Image 1 (tube, rainbow, N blue to C red):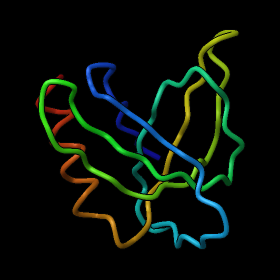
Image 2 (cartoon, one colour):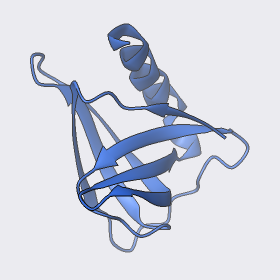
Image 3 (tube, rainbow, N blue to C red):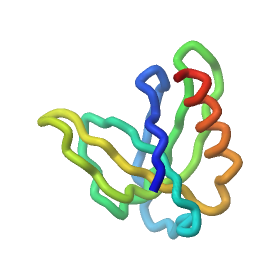
Length: 101
């Protein structure tokens, strides 16, 4: 799997989605990694909102937590995959990440 790390310069908010079935893009070997201050169980569906503090507008999409690695007592890496319907939004996010790198 290839994961693009969401830079700390982007504002990321997420909330758990209850009772929603998301068809994950299993045939696509890419996803996103987000450094969080709280752990999230693998298999959890999240509504992710990504944007820049200095710019208006956000990119919103549902994602599934694939794994959660503990980095320190207060930091966790969340590995996220997206649904098949969200390819265009993921391309927007990856373009934004490349522009900020």
